[in-house]
Image (cartoon, rainbow, N blue to C red; front, side, top):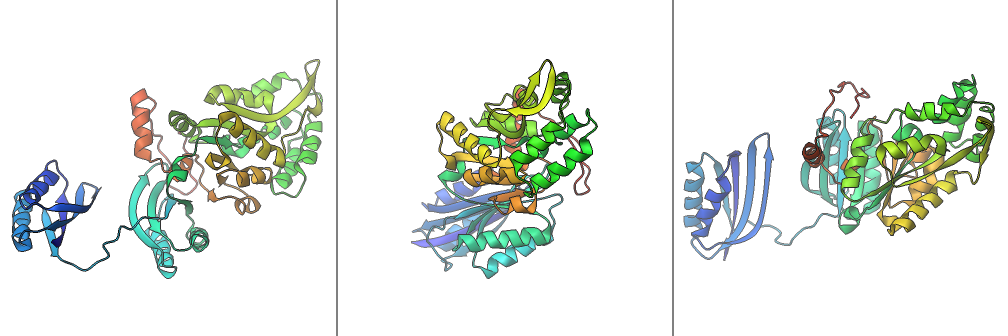
Length: 408
């Protein structure tokens, strides 16, 4: 048996593969491996075969067949190589806006130094960020993760790492923090606008999100500043919440895939109920403001959803849905999200403070939530194909400058 490696390149068109395999079929070949990629209409098709026939005759027939359809072909006979099947160990998703070649170059060079081999690369997104998924074979998980953190920081791109296999595809439940994650602002600051205490509330909120203040104590202090506020303001604020760009797309896509979706918030049930209705969420955990005679008393009632409370809520949701914690995803930005991010099978720090990013599996530093889908291995093409079927497909022009806005 002779092994023959055939590489076909040229303009992609229907029938090329059929012509190639018709020529191969006349020589009773056994197909050992095949790979194909199309970039901007240009095809690269590689086929490894074994044959008992004359390999030179096979080469001549293949070259003639490919010339008949205007394709270039390269044929190698009995080339030395590793015949063992090589399987990737990790998926590395690189996201940038824009994604510079220098970032990919830096990552590939770093991989070479730690013996990480890139087995395959495919584009996973072109909007609202450019995303590439690299299937890699890495001998050391910790070295790989340390390398991508370093390169991501230096190159200014987001790089997520997940082990390949069933576990990556088995995620079934996702929870989002609300303030500055699922929505663009902080609810308690919006409420404080109506009492003239926004500046004081913002100061406490910022310190709490950095982990400098106990969340429960900071919450009580901020809520106290809302005493006397007309409870009707809660609905007013709830109906005016601005979703983070990509939030609708992300939740809609995950629900199509059978995910259970929920929110775990240090905010307030009277406001988050509007998000539950708007996004058709399955779970919610938040604090409840005390209201007497139509006005806020400046107190919360019931157990406070603080840092450990968020993790407990995630565990409760998972138990109710009948999934293990390894099948959960959590997305958050503040110090009170740390326990929840650590407990989830995949914890994603979203535009988070450094103390939070250290405890997450990966970070996103883009003004969009769509990249959560790309990290989970869901491509933009798949998302838009599903949106087109039900009439929800749309793209909003985006400012190309880093950090530019746009709502999807």
